[in-house]
Image 1 (cartoon, rainbow, N blue to C red):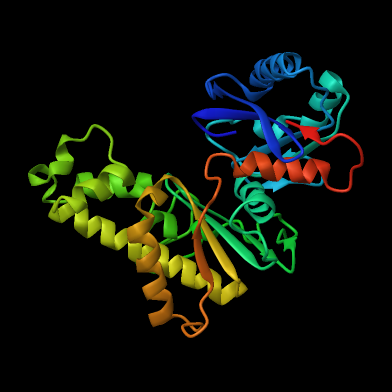
Image 2 (image 1 turned 90 degrees about the vertical axis):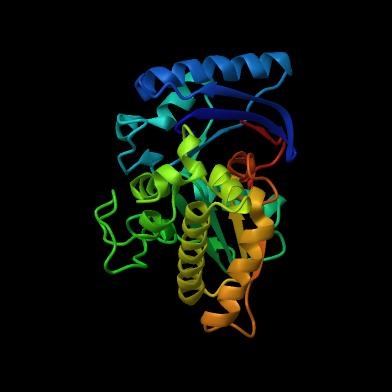
Length: 309
């Protein structure tokens, strides 16, 4: 469930039978939005003559996956903490629900069906509007007593003199290398009006990298700063968790030919594992890993049909 779109997938035996999306319509409270989601789910089930065995929800926030509750406030769905997802699923279809953080769900999806396969010591990090992360050690997702373990890679301090983040911490990775931070930095730069970026309605990493490739000096400066920030954040994660693989997702991976070699050079120059670095891989399923991860959570240990939403 993203801030702009809600993606839906009907999955059978690890394969998508159908996919759909709805506008997030975050101006509507989530309880009312779930009714529209359920209607779309019923439509997909009817069209494919399918019976659901469970429903998985990947949500952009801190999740209590034991009690199926959203713990953190999320500006797009401000009433999410009050939603009883389990009751909703039982009342509508009489099926179980799984609820998990979206980065953790994506890690599971890549672990089972993508570029994380074959490794039980794995980090997934998403770069874009924000910076999300999830960590697996010995085949187990990190969680912690507050359900935040491994999940706040974007909120590690990498600049003690940095700005205060919207989370309240100082100098977070997100304040140095996320879409919202970069857009502010570009617009406040003295050379902004002379930059080709001034012609952009919205500044994001896609057009930042494009303008840098065309020689724009401001775009190049901010791109290189972001690359360095991401690299330092990833080195911190390596030092904390010593993974075998790091899977990187997000729209920025369209520029993987720039990003992956840069991060690899930083790791082999500045980290403690320079002689034995983890494999750096782009996500195999950048748009659907979260749904595949929720499918796995619903179906693991179950017998019989393996269809889920």
